[in-house]
Length: 242
Image (cartoon, rainbow, N blue to C red):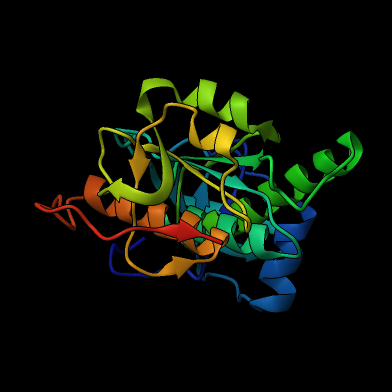
């Protein structure tokens, strides 16, 4: 496949040597994108490897060229976000995936409005993973982000450890020294959560919605990691999440 030829779509497969498309991907390629035989498709395994292919019709692809392995970027960027009502959490997961975040942790906090049964929480996480998979394919990510099961705030703090920071007012600028950021719900952090001991990270002078703060955190940390922006030399204005 010529290097300048752009793939029409990316799909995830388990085996790059003998790729088998699932029914949903076949339907998307055939009925939505209306691919014609010979058009370029990119195959990825979700773990950082990909290769070119061509659409052969009848639900099949023919591999082209060798497998490329993309190295993992360091440090890994993780965003733990308090789940919010409606589809706003899904929107945030979609954008965090597009930005390149490595791990996304749905989280319940003291002031979270959302309260799910274990069954409902499992269905939500499955949906979050489907959203991330679709966003990764659209943005040509060869490595799928990890989507954790629903965690409590104390569990997220423990998982973050020394790499963690809490988004709130009065914080310092985003830093790759703290690539694990917790973002609170509409009502902000409770007094107990604010006293958890994590350093505070700020994002600016305006009051952001919870999902916007989560996406902004992920974009800034990934941009720092990719060398697109340089660490600020001054303390930024405050951030409040609502």
